Amino acid sequence: MGMSIKILCGKWPEAEVVFLQKCRDSLELMLESKSENERFESEIANRTAEVSVDRTISFTQLAPRVGDGVTGTENLFDLSLSQALGTVVKSPKFDFASSKLGKVKQLAGFSDPVYAEAYINVNQYDIVLDVLIVNQTNDTLQNVCLELSTVGDIKLLDKPTPLTLAPRDFSNITATVKVASTENGVIFSTIAYDVRGSTSDRNCVYLEDIHIDIMDYIIPGNCTDTEFRHMWAEFEWENKVRLSLCFSFILVPVI
Image (tube, rainbow, N blue to C red; front, top):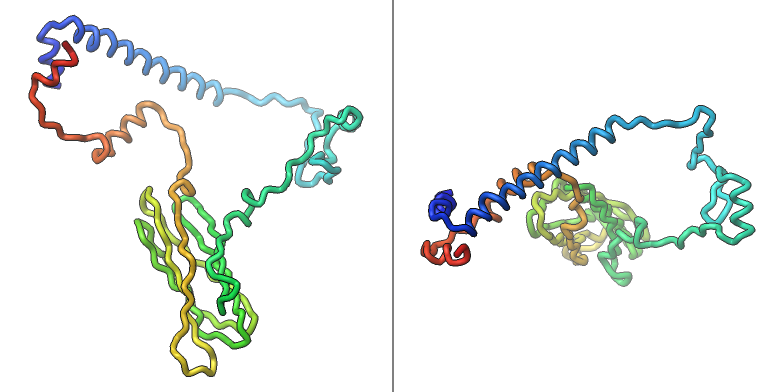
């Protein structure tokens, strides 16, 4: 503020254009954008849906599937015409990456005595790990415990309960991880177990690391210009930089 007052008192034509004209234009542009957003939101809120009273209601979930992505609720004339012209929209092939199978991560090898894989379910700031544990031996495993440790600003909410697995048996263990900040994290995990009837020490299987990407739980949102400026002002660690310069160097670009 002090520098702005000194520049204005200097009566430089370039400074007057920047501070008086361009700043005023920027303010007018911001106010016009805000008014347009408010007008658009009011139009959407006051808009009424007009539907004919004799229009049929189509329940997609209850409609039988005819084939090639066409449901039984389609107009028969349009359907027959599109089939004759060969313009029927075909359904895309099933993509495993967009299904739940794309979120399954293998944690142990097939040659390990205990096989494990995890389904990672990201729900905003909560990450649920549904771990499948398979006993691949002919022995009964006791006190099978999934031990988790985290690196980064994520923490484990609950410790999994130990269980017992019969020969060639399997079970699921659920663990919840809480995300506290926008940074990547790593989850290290091991499976410790005892063999029934064995006098050896406790066995342990080291599992593959689970890397948590911030893009998995960041959801895009909308905000107005005023809200953005208010939130930006709260992040002082990002926009405050202390500079120690001579006042003459600051006036060089203005002149």
